[in-house]
Each structure stands twice: as structure tokens, then as C-alpha cells.
Image (cartoon, rainbow, N blue to C red; front, side, top):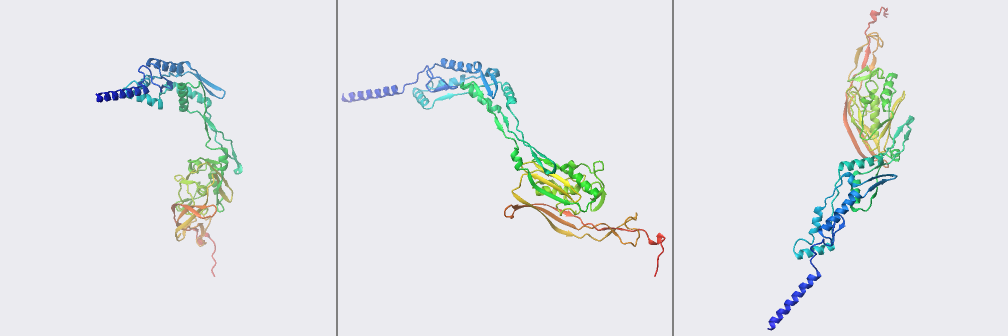
Length: 461
């Protein structure tokens, strides 16, 4: 009998505990949304399914069709309703997901869901769908009124290497994607119907200050015209003229032949001596090679890159071996601006020198150009040509007259050396292709007329 009483007491205690737990954690109501459930930031706690669905529908209808929104920038504004862009938002699936909390699973699972919602509320969101073509066209129209392209500073090369810098200006640009995101956020939250547009500031590629700091003299190179006649000097000046005041943008490639054009009389060139293989002839191209070689020396010191360059068939007297750049109809000299800022060229030709100045961003190094002769070949014996005109040598027994000096053949190579500005120590060097120059024999005029044929009396001792 005592055992039966004891069992009854235990059963009562267990029942009380169960009832206490049930009272402490009641099963969520079955006909309303649980506390802590949201759809599109709309709280649905305590509402029936139909009430919650209707409240969401009313809010979305108001946001899409009734609220008028205004985009503002300065004294300009644009008004619209999302319905203008065929806006739509179907949240039926999200409402069903919100309803499932506290309405699916066992009583224990429902109580656990309710407890979890109190700690971590759930908000089901979805973006509004628009007619993207209409919305994008609307925003692009706004961009057309707000956007402003940045204005780069420009450099004008005046006479005597004087530079004039124009003023640079920042630009403005609205982001289409960012505006769509802001619209979607404001429309759904209903926080504000007036939206201030904030364009991005677009910096110019080159500001006035940057160009002033990066348009300094970085190279000057001259070649001698002491051995040139007036016609050849004219050709050098004519060849360098298109480069005077030339601006070369980063990455741009400059072709000598394209800028100078054909070496003809109609194009402003005069006849003068020029190389044809390993001989010297007269043609309209004489002097153009000295112009291209002067340019080559300048771009080497300016730390620019030659992309097309070839040496002469023989050495030249106006620059060291491997520092020349030969040009002809089918042989070009091209260089590129491999620096970060534009470079500007200025040229000048006198009766004594041809000079090229290069202005651009300063190098952190002192640049030294070296020419190194690797091997030498003898010029060979004298070669004679008959002077049938008698202009230089008339009689056969007259001493020959030099027509063209002989040239030593050689192999050579150029180097660009980068040195520390403070210590002068070499930091690195760039080596260029090995050039081969052919030897040429000295050429002399000789007479072709015999003194006996001249009718002159010969005296004998």
C-alpha cells in the first residue's frame, strides 16, 4: 500500500513539472504569425495569414503606385513612381516561409522555433523587379544632365622651348547601378521619398600641377654639321621640322618615315651625298639619316625606347658607332613613349649643329650612353675612278684627288647606363644589338688625258 502511495506521489510530481514547462514555454498560437517574423521589414507578429498577406500587399502597393519619389541634384530634380517603370514585387513565397515558423513540426520544434526567433528575428526580403530598359533610360537621361567629363591639362610648346600649361578640371559621373540600388532600398523601406544624388568625382588623367612637375628637360642631344654643305644641312632641317613641338603620348609609337614623308625635291629635299650600300652616291635623302640619328641619341638619353632601328652600312662621322639610326624608303626609325606622362620634342638646326630637346617626367637616375667598338676591319687599298670630265684631275700623270675617304669596318655595341644621382655609381645597364659596319676603300679621281695629246711641247733636259 505504501508503494502505491509513493508511485502516485511521483506521478503527480512529474505531471506538475510537465505542466510547468508547458506553461513556461507555451506552444505558439496556431492561427497567427510568430513574434520576430518580418517580410520586407514589415512586422507580422500576431497577424493571421490573411492579415499578414494583406498588410504586405498594401505596403508594396503604396510604395510602388502611390508614393512619389524625387531625385535631386543641385537645383535639378526628377520625380517618378516605381510604377512608371513597370515595378512589381511578388512576396507570396516569402510570406509562406514566414508563416512556417511555429506552424510546422512537432510542438517541441514549434516552441524551439519561437524561442530562436526571440533571439534572432527573421526578415525575408526581395528586390523589386523593373522594366530595366525604361529605368536605365530614365537614369541615363539624368546622367546626361549631371555627368561632366574631366578636363586634362594640356601643354602647348611655344617658340624657344617655352611651355604653356592649361588648367585641368575634375569631372562628375553618376553610377547607374548605384542609383538602382539606392532606389530599391528607399522604395522598399519607405524611409524617404526625396533622394539626393551624389555623383563620383572623376579626376583628370593629367592635372596642371602634375604636368608642370613632369614636363621638364630630360634630354638634349646634338650632332655636328661641320662637314655638311648647305644642301645637306637643308635636308637635316627639313627632316627634323615635323618633330619640332611634337607631343608623344604614353604608349604612342612615332615613325620617322611617316612624319617626314618621301625624300623628294617636291617634298622639300635637295640633292646631297648619301650612302648606297658601302659606296657614297648623290641623292635626295642625304642628311635625313643625321636627323634620325640625332633623334635616336635624344630618345636614348630621355629613357625612351626605340622599337625599330637599324645602323648604317658604314660608320658616320656625326655620331659614335651604334648611336646612329639609318632611314631609307624601306628602312624606318620608330620610337615609343614608354613613360607615364606625355613627352614633348623640340628641334633646331643651325649651320653648325642639329639639336633635339626632350621634355617629360624626370628620371630618378643619371643616364649615360656608351658606345663600345668590339672589333675593327681594315679599309683596304685605294680605289681609282676615271675623271672623264677633267673636273678634278685632267692628265694621267697628275696626282690623284681624293673623292671619298676610306672607312674602317667594325662591330660595335651601345649601352644605356643608369647611375645613382648622388653617388654616380652604376645601378644597372641596358645593352642593345651588336651592329656591323662594312669597310670601304678610299676612292680617288685620276686623269684620263695624256700630256702628249694636249699639243703641249715637252721639254727635255
